[in-house]
Image: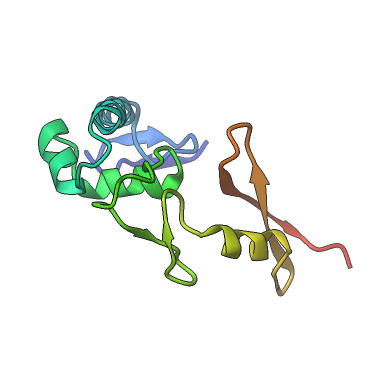
Length: 134
């Protein structure tokens, strides 16, 4: 059992893949739903406009995009995400398609390799680290 303090409210909770207590996780999910709905109706909104309309902090909105939970419309020129490796503009996640392809190719670092899996929606996300078998 992994006990942690919630970074939002400070309460002690049993960690379960998300670093928020159940109450703060519920609030975060409600905020995510508000952001998703607002962005659907207002695809060209800025992060500040989304935050003001939904009450969700801009940091959380950017986190939703980086996690791949939200995807920007190609029409949205008001929010610019950049690939963390090369700086190319992206619509969601942390890496562009080119850099994701390099990660898929299997960069190795010491005893560990990074792999990327494709989920059913076609979005790419980092999945797991595993030890190389040498």
